[in-house]
Amino acid sequence: MILEVILNFTQLDISNKTQVYINKKNQFKLQNTKHHSVFLILRLFLSSMNVATWGTADLSILYQDWYAQNALDGSIYTCSSTPWQTDPWWKLDLMKTYSVNRVTITSKPDCTSCESWLNGAEIRVGNVSLNVSSNPVCAVISTIPTGATYSYSCHGMEGRYIIVNNPGTSKCVTPCEVGVYSPVGNLATGRNVTQSSTNGSWITEQAIDLDPGFKQPSSTCSSTNVQTNPYWRVDLSYIYRVSRVVITNRLDCCPERINGAEIRIGNSLENNGNNNPICAVISSIPAGVSSTYICNDMEGRYVNLIIPGDSRILTLCEVEVYGEGVIKQGKSSYK
Image (cartoon, rainbow, N blue to C red; front, side, top):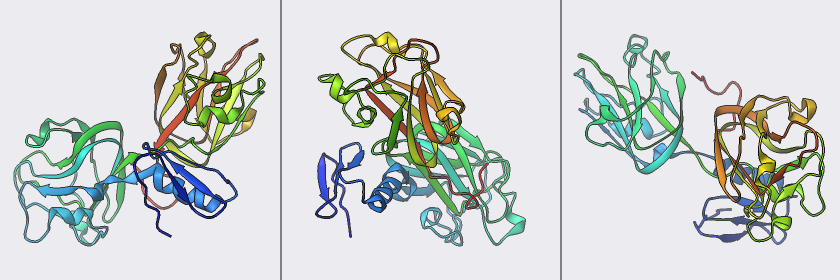
């Protein structure tokens, strides 16, 4: 089965009982959640993407037939390379600006003596094409063992160009594979959610229904009753690197209710997930405003919002969770 994702609000019929809705942000939800395998396939496809393969690569100087594009062909045995020169670079043009969570570099698999060639190379992300060294630095490569793939976190740096440059004289740049990972889609959409209590029709799922609740908050926002330590939790089903969480506050009244809420991310359900590490504490969000909280690639399956204290109400009109890469143990080396 081939799914064509049209980048406007569209409806896809997976079967006569399952419908998938995808909007222009690549957010989706299933009408029939029995089709869990379809849900997982779509979630894995839409939540994380290596955008490097869509771009075109270049080198400061080409060495023989070690073409720049070899670093994007999916094979670690066909590498790109410059000759020995001053300040060599490899550059990827992504064709448009992306938010970059991480860049992966794979070194030559069959050359132990080449292991040091990338030592000190800089990974840069930015929008400057000609003077590549003026782009901001994401990371500096200390060393990559022979044939290994190392991942470097760029924490949402934005740019059209990804550069690997090696400053100095008698240097070369020899990436065998380069990956550029950008968050795509809201990880919270369609997930299982729960809250400590429910105030009437303000059910839990309405915080992830893609509707910010500006017209009908009681049918598009979630809310607990007045209670001690109210909380709301989304189960992402897998462990993700969470780069940011976006919270939309209620428009029609009482924006101060959200003040002091903690955003927690982790893998434990101890105390209903409310003991997981804190990404951020919400000081305030104006009425109807969506505020973004940077979580710096915190790893976790559960995202909680909790307001500590007595006689509190937790009202959420939309919760968005952005990140990338279902973490698979033992598959890669991470720096």
